[in-house]
Length: 358
Ligand SMILES: Cc1cc2nc3c(=O)[nH]c(=O)nc-3n(C[C@H](O)[C@H](O)[C@H](O)COP(=O)(O)O)c2cc1C
Ligand SMILES: C=C(O[C@@H]1CC(C(=O)O)=C[C@@H](OP(=O)(O)O)[C@H]1O)C(=O)O
Image (tube, rainbow, N blue to C red):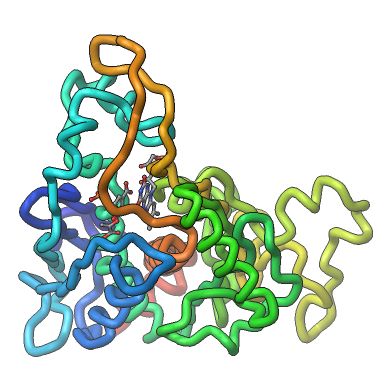
């Protein structure tokens, strides 16, 4: 039915200051109920301009489905969605037209391609992640049929870390801390940096409940590698940890192993993945976002002719990208799991026979 066969895939199009952004999601099985209100609610969790912890650029991020859904049900062909840009204010970027913002993609993009859409970074702006969230919502609707739930929250901002993670405190409109006691300190850290025209970084925790045993492959297509690839493809992500992550290189084997009982694992240091395959426990991933590069302090840079110049920015920027970034990471996780679930269908001949049995 579709171009690539049944593997859950997507691609996005559009730029931050162009006319629109969107995505094409392919490989989605027919028969999934598409709840448009749910898709919009996912968009609303990520959209900019909602509070003082985010960029003040106001976008409605209303998503329109153009294809692949008939009478509220997926038809098994490509689902395409579009989101029109409404609040670009491109004039704010004329003073950086010919120079490179430290920490942003401008320098490398221009040197690689010899051209650049300087308006908000064009394709390099994380405005593109709106389209990922639309695609991720379709993945989530497929995972819902399998009873798999993906959620996220902030575990650290500017080094202020939550020690306990309470996912029950995370609801759809509250994407902040997993630990209410530290949430205020984290919010204060963002505002303190913002008031000094600076920015902070942060860490998001992505949690998956009810993942079955068997998602991922033992080598190359390891679930770890697919997740790392997906997360590292998000703007500003600089590290990904699976389960205990870097800590597992510091503790002894006895303390790192998850001992096994007949009703499951005693601990979950592995983050729910062993040998590239989900082990049936919660999947836990930490995603590390750097501090927002566009800040309002004067910095040194060069222009496109390699003259040394000062860089003073205008525009509207997130003081901490991790906050909205956590929703993007959550969407990317859903997309990986939907893909792995379809791939997994053909791992045993019994499964293939089930599909074709008369
Ligand atoms: C949700 C989200 C929002 C972001 N908002 C901004 C922003 O307002 N200003 C900015 O300079 N960078 C922002 N970024 C980060 C830049 O897009 C990113 O740092 C840049 O593309 C360079 O890529 P790199 O950091 O991966 O090397 C954001 C990233 C995410 C995930
Ligand atoms: C608009 C969004 O975030 C943008 C992400 C971003 C960046 O450089 O990544 C820079 C800012 O916008 P602009 O591209 O106009 O400079 C943010 O406002 C959004 O997330 O929808």
